[in-house]
Amino acid sequence: MAALDLTRLRAVVFDTDGVVTDTARVHAAAWKHVFDGFLRGRSAPFDIRDDYLRNVDGRPRLDGVRTFLASRGITLPEGGPDDEPGAPTVHGLGLAKDALFVEQIAQHGVAAFPSTVALLHELRRRGCRTAVVSASQHCRMVVTSVGLMRLFDVVVDGNDSAALGLRGKPDPALFLEAARRLEVAAGEAAIVEDALPGVEAGRRGAFGLVIGVDRSGSQEAAMRHAGADVVVADLAELAVTGRVPVRSR
Image (cartoon, rainbow, N blue to C red):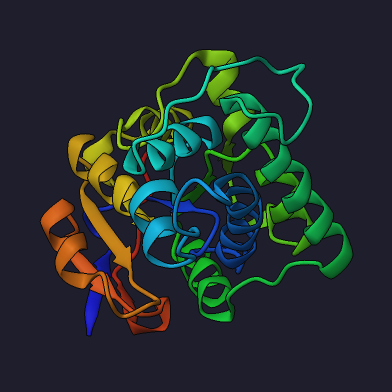
């Protein structure tokens, strides 16, 4: 069984969608609805697994629009935040996806992965600090809705990224900001990610341990190539050993 050794790690930074909460599928479905409407008559439909994992998962929303459209050889005007949702611009498609995601969460709610909740409790019991990050601006809403905010010392989301000018994954800026707020060096923190850009960000940020969560069972090789030290199908497969030493300030 893979192990997370708290004698050498002081903190763990969790991605939100697909790691803490079962919201990755909601994001994917929203992207498919928006892109399929736009692509009709232009290109093949959006593949809810392959296109999502390759081009959208883990990226800031507008980067996801640009990356996916580029994969189809399509370029759109950038537009702006005041565009009508669904307008044929990068911002227009992004706004349509965002509105649909919020609507689906409001109607159907969201669930946390039980194994992640159990891991969070175990880490806290052993003196480990924790953070949750997301490229989404709705991270706090989602984490609060499942009652887990109290289990995180730090939250860094898309609102923070916009305010601080942080680059999106695979740049490690989001994770490094979480480590800074946790008051630990990157080498003293583990990263838990289910998206390839996030795994790459963990490697590029020189974090002490990069854990890939491959719930689809199809990304282990790609995750290891991107820089994952450990790949699990679910966090129940991850053992926690040791305890974070108490440091005097």
